[in-house]
Length: 344
Ligand code: AHM
Ligand code: MG
Image 1 (cartoon, helix red, strand yellow):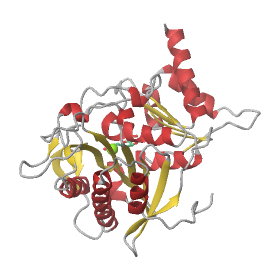
Image 2: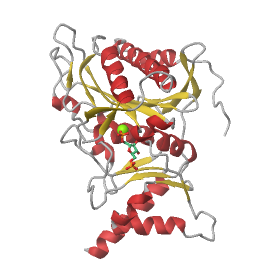
Image 3: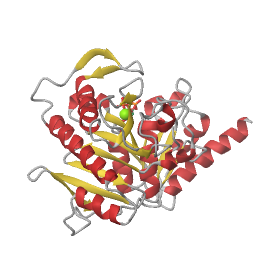
């Protein structure tokens, strides 16, 4: 795979302006929102890079809404994003994986027509050990664009197909921003010497089928039968050379999806007997990644339904997740269906 898939020197800001120019009705508000957001990402990226050097690693005494111990860098990233975004005048409400409730825009500030939802630092179990982590986000238009008051829960609980844009930043060997506004998926790499995200892969396409599967196999004893059958199938060598598959699992969704996007294959967080809806959150994790996958030519379902058509019922709702190359996701769906039919 070539390192650079584009010879154009285009910054994320220029890219957003050029995309805005395709919509003559655009007021520029969305471009300004994204400019603010990439500033937040640059600050988080800087602080992640220096995490071992200052006193920001480790755990706090706080427990988040999912009953998990909160890491200090999570809280810091959450705080940076909220503080950068609340005064731009573009948002009417935000929601974060780290906040139990909606994040409202302070009364003295202006409300805009967009909604921002995000997971400030995905991959919490990897933070303290210098393994890739990331930030996931998506943007919606508020339901009533003429409303100038605070946004509501209904504005946040829109189905994924209504996303205006989504993306993730991955703080890996370099910092990359993967972004879609429904016009394909572009990858930008941060150049710290000039402080800009530059376009490095244009309109990335996921292969139709891969040879890698990504799942926490430690949960296999709790999986539904169809899931166990599928993974056994992937591990059985085939004459056509398509199998066996390799297993890769970082445990940071951003990193596992990023690899899947480039190399193809499948990423899964299935339901199991102790977590019937899996682990990943529909609003902050599954929907943004599903939008990116589909925009790159892949497929994203909960095993049965298209993720982007699921109507969220609550902020922190979880959803099983199967996403990646079209042929791989279709195959796991057929295994799940077959096992269900047998068990009636
Ligand atoms: P987090 O948002 O608290 O970091 O949790 C989400 C992460 C995902 O990045 C990753 O895919 C998953 O949890 C890993 O979970 P597990 O350790 O159960 O395999
Ligand atoms: Mg997460």
